[in-house]
Length: 287
Image 1 (cartoon, rainbow, N blue to C red):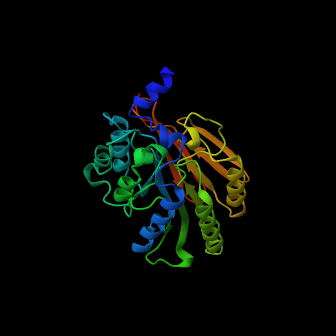
Image 2 (tube, rainbow, N blue to C red):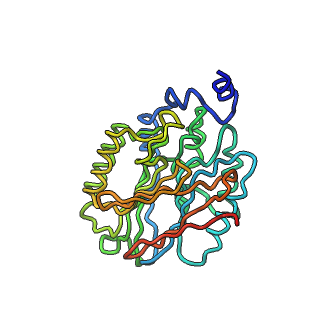
Image 3 (cartoon, rainbow, N blue to C red):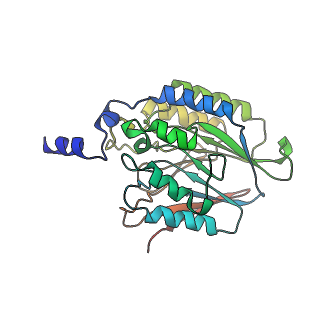
């Protein structure tokens, strides 16, 4: 009883959002994302054939932000061609978006979703009905972009396809799954070198600590893993669990990236070298 009372009073726990769904739910967030996507051009990133992908997740910003700031500075200091994926749970509870977003903008790092930092939302980002705040800042939680080499965006110059999915609620939902299936089918003859899917929620760990947002259902996981395998996806990147895991299933590499919150004794981020092959390394944010 005391634990329930504590959780109810703790500003980090949205008990309604954790156990009875969020507002708006995934079907509505997906439709709002599609409407946003229709209002902006698709992003085509001009990159060399080899570049770096910086990946960070689960900063859970509240009063401190040291790990995230170190990550942003490391990202900016790299002299190689690079871009960044942020895999969700930027904030911890309520009313911290302005503070967290100011760190992402550190020294002009990011001005919009169409810059080189690409965002996906996590369960903490949409708790307490905060989806519309996240949406105002970052636009869409379901979208795709790609990279190309050379001076013209055309089929023979295409490099890699990136697909962002909204799993903040612990489900893709029927409409988003149909969208993903249709997109992968439309893109299969484009000749992409790699297809990278990134999102917040991991697939294989059975952790119920986050209520209904803990994992995708077994049925949805089965459908998604088979779809990604059939489409030739190279890598599925996620966070959420705060514990690193690298596994392979159906020729797809599934990577859960460590948390970067200040509360962790050893927060990490990941750098992936993307070329004909994809290699990666984890870096500790504090010694």
